[in-house]
Length: 97
Image 1 (cartoon, rainbow, N blue to C red):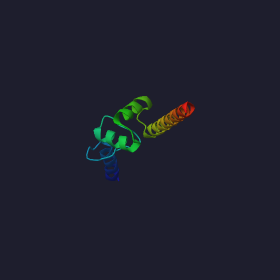
Image 2: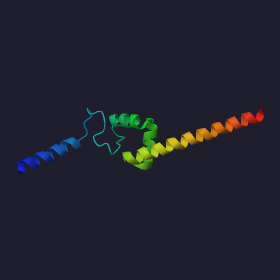
Image 3: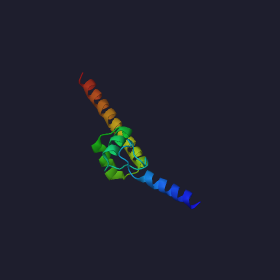
Image 4: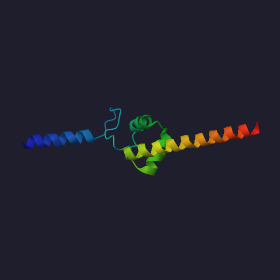
């Protein structure tokens, strides 16, 4: 029985070590911006640039769930600002005519 326990424990430790051959992160609940392959994965996953990802991690921490929500709300805010700006431009053009 002790052998089985050690085997399970050893197996868990092996999986926790980052393996650069794996394309995605080992722990998908946390973002590690120190690993290039994780930066590539998370920028594609969130649809952001590397700079945006790094800024979000500095602001929100490495939790993937918190980052996902933060980036989603930031995207919504940007879309809203653009919509308001477009409406203002249309309104000012129609007032001139």
